Each structure stands twice: as structure tokens, then as C-alpha cells.
Amino acid sequence: MSGGSAPRPRSGCECVVATSNPGKLREIRAILAGAPVLLASLASFPRVELPVEGEDYTENAIAKARAVARATGRPALGDDSGLEVAGLDGAPGPRSARFGGPGLDDAGRVAALLRAMSGLEGADREARFVCVVALAMPEGEIVTARGECAGRILATPRGDGGFGYDPVFEAEGAAGAMAQLTGSDKHRISHRGRALRALWKAHRGHAP
Ligand code: ITT
Image 1 (cartoon, rainbow, N blue to C red):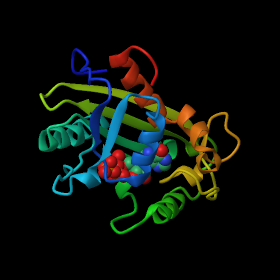
Image 2 (cartoon, rainbow, N blue to C red):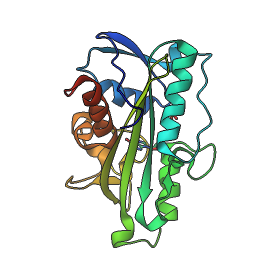
Image 3 (tube, helix red, strand yellow):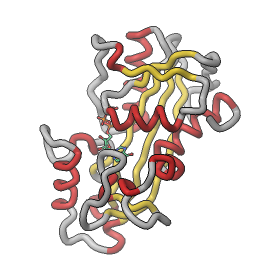
């Protein structure tokens, strides 16, 4: 955790989710479904722009949350996440959304990842998802939390759930790809589920 004493949004308050990724928004809403907070989409604030991202999950998550909190005058929740592959020295990491070049969709990035990994076997296929979430208050307070999910990269895509690299990521202890799990099974073990539960617990003292 960072940022000193944790901000405490009032019960039932509105918080803007500082993401342009619909997969993330859907998951954040599902993970925090039991929490007394109304999660607004950035689509409701079409003039608000997200900052250009750098190479550090925490800095990126804080920058997204802070930009949206300042622009909207509401608490904002940023998520910066990525996939780290052992045999690629931790790439694509914070560049996961940009891997393979501009203009690719999720399936194109998955194909680019499998191409980059051709010939990699065993421990080189080990990987983890990382997620840092940041809650920024309009007055400037920030709290962050991190979650990870370890696993390995499959040889071919499977399933159609989730988003991003889920079709080729098999979490430790799961039989099959993340994209083959139900939403609730993914959120129980995912980097995003872990990060959001830790964030919520830090400022509410219990799970969402
Ligand atoms: P915002 O910055 O607007 O939030 P983004 O997609 O650009 O959206 P990131 O820079 O944090 O966000 O990139 C995260 C990328 O990592 C995302 O686009 C996916 O490719 C991948 N990723 C993150 N979480 C994932 C998950 O749960 N399942 C599969 N892939 C994931």
C-alpha cells in the first residue's frame, strides 16, 4: 500500500472507473458488486482524457486515477495491469496493451505473443498477471494495492471468457485457460480480484 492514511469514500458514493478498456470495467464492477459504491464509466465523461502511460504499473495507475479525479471532481479508480512472461524477461509487462504494435485487437496481441514465444518451453512459459489499482480522491489523497496471479502460457488459445490474454493464460491450479473459467472463478484468483479486495480491505477493514 502507499500514500499514507487511506481515503474513506462515503457509503454509497460515486467513483469513476478510470479506464477505456471495457473488459476491465466489467470485471471491476463484478468484483466490487457487493460494495456500497456506484461505479461510473468514463464514457459518462467524454471530455476526460487518460494520460499517456509509462513503464511502471503503480505510476500509471495513479496517473489514470488522479487525472480522472481532478477532471471530474469525484473519487476515481485506476487500474494498470499486464502479463509478464519468464522467457521474455518479463515482457510485455506494463506494455501489454501495446504489444505487437498499434492497431491490433486482443486476438492479434495473443497471436503476436505466441509468435514471440515460439520455441520457448518449460519454465520459459511461466508467467504472471500483475495489477495495481489506485483510488484517488479529488482532494489529492491516493491509496494503491497490487495483486498477482501466477501461471503459464498455453500453446494455443482456448475459451471465450474474460479479455486480453486470458485465452492463453492458465493460472496455477486451474485446469484450462483463464478464458474458460466462469467470471466468479476468474475474479477469485485473478490479479485484479486480489488487488481490488486488498484496496477495499485497506480502507474499509473488510472484504467488498
Ligand atoms: P486503460 O489504460 O484505459 O485502463 P488498457 O487496456 O490500455 O486500458 P493497461 O495499459 O493497464 O490498460 O493494459 C493492460 C493490458 O494487459 C490489457 O490491455 C490486456 O492486454 C492485459 N490484461 C490486463 N488484465 C488482464 C486480464 O485480466 N486478462 C487478460 N489480459 C489482461
